[in-house]
Image 1 (cartoon, rainbow, N blue to C red):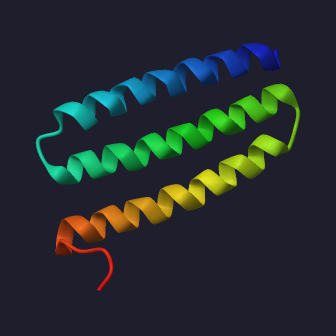
Image 2 (tube, rainbow, N blue to C red):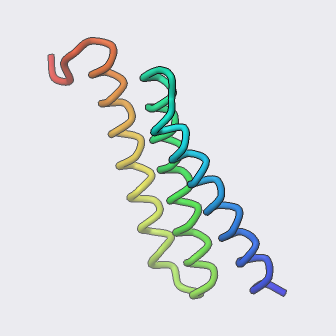
Length: 89
């Protein structure tokens, strides 16, 4: 039963990544593109967690945590660059 749930989760997250890729390429504004990149990072974290559940190992959960921290810092830095034109003041 868990295999069916994992496969369904993989398909749902893959569809969400495709929709985010569409928003990233066709976004009418820069804010839409920033949100699409941030959401893609969250979906990549979900893929790592699903794969970790499927493999029954904690290594992928630690990778998901590192990816979450990297995604947060990169999103904040990109938003700061868009708003002010400079990252480091």
